[in-house]
Length: 272
Image 1 (cartoon, one colour):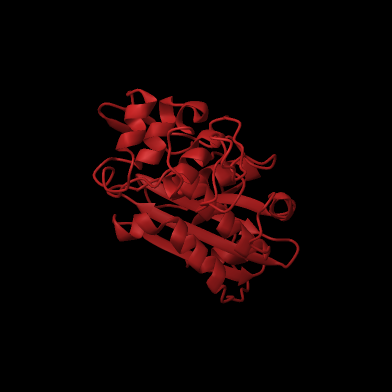
Image 2 (cartoon, helix red, strand yellow):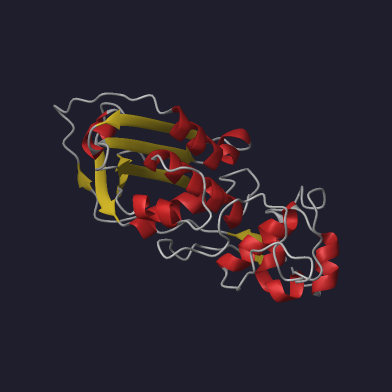
């Protein structure tokens, strides 16, 4: 976290970070620039992840694979998407690492929620295995290493039809913009929820792109992100809740695609 770059690089590997609050690829990117780290990081997966972490913090990254340019990312790519934040993406939240641990608060919960009239509202449940798998990957730490309850439902219909599939309960919702939706998704994907270890913003962003690609039926060739960005901007988003007390860690989103008429409910809650 605080060491000179050459010392910090020597400490960054998967084994060394096993018992830390977050991945060392995120820790080292907190106070060290890519210009400092790139000449010292060996080619491999960690170099790629650190490059993404620094690009998301504003560093200019050469994403080519060049043996003559020590600041290029390199040929080993584990996050196969542009490191640079795209025009349609928000400025994601980054954690604060200190000697005492990691502080990574959730984005503010949207306000202004209003009751949703769910009856009568017919719904047709759709088997969307690809989106289900992508969402499960996004919140995997929540379920594998913590105590979260997660759910994804896809319906042929609008967002009200999707919420009616959640069950017979009092539900409120408010529409939110794309920036807010993506911020919540990446925060959830980066978080370890109540008891798990963080995975970091760069890895969460990759899983979020995967989720959006399945929802928008976009091929996973993400060389420039333009096709996915165009498709994503057609989606509409809502935050929703019930009369249950708010959990310590929660993700409650609804998305609707006007292009194909499908809607998705995403839920992940972990009270700790």
